[in-house]
Image (cartoon, rainbow, N blue to C red):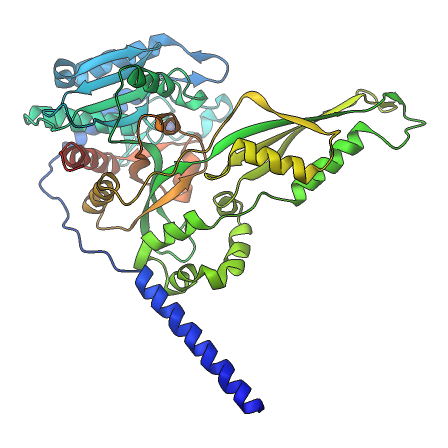
Length: 489
Ligand SMILES: [Zn+2]
């Protein structure tokens, strides 16, 4: 009898293991080889000089202060001098103060246009850290194989690379089948209201719908994903939403010698403790899709686990939750960021207030998150509402099973040694979120390698980009513009 049970258990385990193996091999097919493109010649020295000149102009946007138009106008004059064919052949519109929209009419007006985006503004360099820079942040120094300065990574490199690619195509007499738009906002670093938002409003006014658009967001990473060795291109197919809640409660003010039972601070603290202890639910769908696209680049263990989440779900969830970054990619996050109450040690305050910042996972809505917050707190006397100007919904998730994505992935693999390409969720906010109403396919990708170390340089000290990387960015856009401008989708 005991032996029978052992045999049954062994058979069940073997059966399950076989089933899991089949699921793994079905999910993780190897990629077809891609032929590298070799016929695209670029002048590295000249491209580096062009980016360097762009870096030297301080197109800074500051929170609460907006932009100063003078450096932007200077930047526009530099663009006019550097890219004469673009200024001769493309339509140019200036929106808001300095936002640019270029239109390169396609041969076939019946096709929907595609749009390439980037932003012109950069964050300031912290005055306190100026001494720590190897080369001053607005020097645009070219040294040791790098272009140094604010905007080399975020994100003048992308804008200049797009301009270089279009100028080169124009010089070669190229004519796109479909219209190509170039949209460069002026204020992405402070919210994008005057830049990307206005470009989209402008497109809507003219009834223009896009076939696809590409902005900054993902990049080529290394050593960031568990169980994956080598470089991987991550294309942002969605980005999180944002809501800042102001929680507040009131009680009878009085002397602290006779506090009674109902104190505003105690009530608010209990609500915050509940929010802290009860995170919003996790959803593994995006992570599962990411690993499915990585295919054989993921270790066999990871393939096995992600192909069989029905079984390994709880273990994976625990692994994911242990790391703040991966945790943020599977759920709407709850961050308790500010607290305000009381004026004196012996006075019971009349009210207490807290700020909770939440980043929404696609699939969650501000309404559904607020309903959950209400339930978690479970106290009608703690009131809350989204702060004005501090909320937007998560973006839709763009498809990976359409030609626009496939051609984007193909271009990445052609230019970057056939590396795996996978969709992922962008945790921060980019200008791209504004484009959802005019484009079903919104992708976020910057074609350079950024290691963990590089990510610290962005908005930090010693921001830089290698001359070789900049050259590859131009090749990438040159190729993608050609593929996207054809009529196949
Ligand atoms: Zn940026």
